[in-house]
Amino acid sequence: MSKEQIKDLIERHLPGAGLADTALKGVQLFRVTEAIPCVPAVYEPTVVSILSGTKEAVLDGEHHIYGSDKYLLCPMTLPVEAGTPRASKADPLVGVVVTLDPRMMRELTMEIETAASGNKQPRGGSPSALALASWDVGFTQALLRLLELLNNPTDLEVLGSGRLRELCYAVLMGEAGAAARRAFGVGNEIARTIDYLSTHLNEQVTIDDMADHVGMSRAVFHRRFKEATTMSPIQFVKSMRLNNAAMKIAEGMTVSEAAWDVGYQSSSQFSREFKRMYGQSPRQWSNATQVSERLN
Image 1 (cartoon, one colour):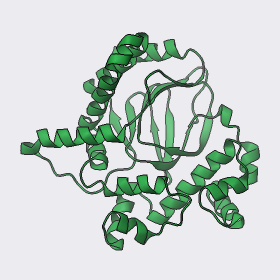
Image 2 (tube, helix red, strand yellow; image 1 turned 180 degrees about the horizontal axis):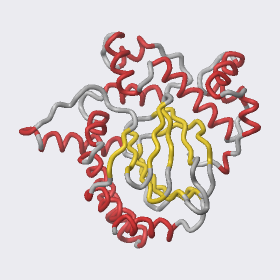
Image 3 (cartoon, one colour; image 1 turned 45 degrees about the vertical axis):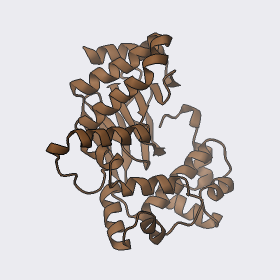
Image 4 (cartoon, rainbow, N blue to C red; image 1 turned 180 degrees about the vertical axis):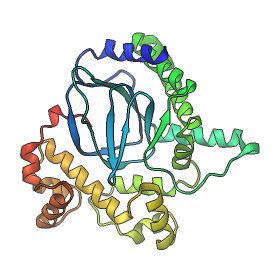
């Protein structure tokens, strides 16, 4: 019943198609009524919950298709392709995106690990990239309680941060909790490296720079990075740059501006790598893409 209540809340606050911010910072509602192919996107640390329909995210060639039986956890910034290729008016995609506050997630992870210090389980290696998790009772109730705040501005103002914390806790304790705890807990070197890269895309960052940033040898860093993201560090940087550039071009930036903005000093190299990745030149992409009709 709780899922139906969540869906009713979303449809009440978003009766038509679109992506809408809410009064809860970091919480967005979406409704898609037409098929949209997968296009380049950059996912921030988020939880995506679907109440009807299906959504798709592609990371390094691996397709993650999910609906109302699973929610998606993205515990770190990742270059993906995302879309809604099966959405229609008869079967719309309805859901909610919650951006994860890294500071809150780190604090909760530390509290959980401290509280469970007498019964710790092995942490495993690097954080996982994308993880799908079943809707358990804790997560479902926490999401419902969070969205119920949209009905009352006073409740939202007083209880908003607490309900977000409750949802984050449910994620950390759920099926994807191990991936989340590895990304936000002690030893989260790969997630910290990705945060660093995300703010230095326009700089020429080498593997040695990345390894030094987290105090690892080049070989160990390369292995752990690929375990976490499925990509080598160089592949990851290239995908991040090209995906960011594709999004900037779709939003109206010129090809040369987008290339420069993400760290390319040669427009011809940018065009070659862009076409190799997306199958069309940056100018063809610019002409074909209509960002106002796209939901990532």
